Figure 1 (tube, rainbow, N blue to C red):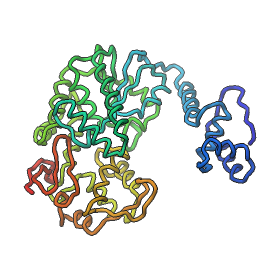
Figure 2: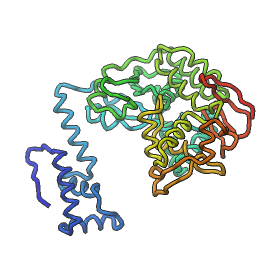
Figure 3: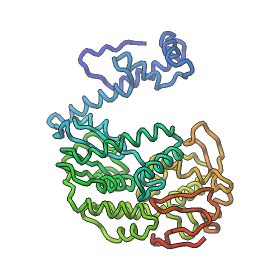
Figure 4: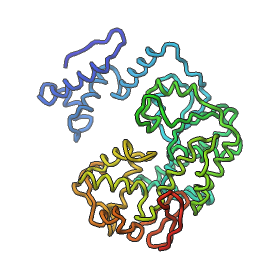
Length: 413
C-alpha cells in the first residue's frame, strides 16, 4: 500500500476513501498479505469489505476507527467554515433529545454541555396512567418484545434514563430539541408534564420545516451548520406549556381517545406542533372500514402497487413520500408490520427470505388484498392486541376506531 504522509494536519476524506478502495482491490488481488493477515487475526470469520479497508486506512492515519477519522475531518471543516461561531452553551447546560442522532453534530459545532437522550418509543405500545412500578414493567416488557432486545439491558437503560430525567428540574439550564412529529411531541409533553418545578432556565428548539430541505423528517438529517443556526432561535418554555403538556399526556394515557381528539380541534400557541402530531397519532386507530392503522394501510397500498418489495424499501417509501407526518424509525416500522406477516391470518407473506428482516421481500396475500379493498376487517382476524397510547385494541372485541374524517367512533365487535 502506498504511503501518503500528512505533514500539515490536513486530511482529505475524499483521498482517504480512494485509498481504501485501492487497498481493498489490492487485498483481494493477494498483493497485501500482511493487511489480510491482520484482518483475519482480529476477526477470523470476517470477509474483506470496504469497511475493513477503511478501518485499515484510519489506523494508518492514526485513528482507532473510520468514524473517528471522519469526525475529526468534519470538526475541522466546520471550524473552517465558521471561524467566528462559538456555541454559547456552558458545560452545565443539559441538551435533551429523544435519541442521540444530533449529539455528534452538536459536538462538531462546539457545544460543550451534557447530552441526554430519552429513547422510549412512546408512540407505540401501552402508555397508561398507572402506578410507576407497573408503568415501568409494561413499557420495558413491550420494548423488549417488540424490538427483540435483552430484558436486563432494556430495564437498565430505562432506569438510567429515568434517573437522568429526575434530575432535570434541578438543572441550571436545559434545552429540549424537538421536531413536529409524534415521537418528538410525545417526548416533549411527557417531559414537561413530569416537571414539578422548572429548571432555572428551560428552553425549547422546535421545528417542522427547514429552508432548502424538500422533505424535512428530523433533526438528525441536518448538518452542524444548520443546528448551530437553530440554536440561535431557541425560546423560553412558558409556564402554561406545562399545563397543556399535562392535559395532553393525560389524554394520551386515557383508555378513550375522546379527550385526545378534543385537544386536536384547535391549535395551541404555546406548543404549536402538538395538535398536528396528535391528529396523526389518532390515525393509528383502526380505520372504520378496514381495521387498519394508517401505517398499515399505506404499507399495504405501496406493496400492492410495487409487487414483491423489501421491507426496507417499504419503510423508505413511507418515510420519504407517503406518511403525512413520519415518526417511526426503521426498527419501529418493522415491529409494527410484523403482525401482518406472522399469525394464522397474514396480510403479507414473505416472498424472499433474507438474513435480516429489512431485506425480506413481501407481497400481499389474498386476505391482504381483501383488507385493502375494504372487503375484510383486520381486527376480526388480527393475531394480537395493539395499543395506541392508553387505548387497547383487542381482536374480536368492541373497540375505538376512526371514521373517514379522523373522528373517534366506537365499533362493536
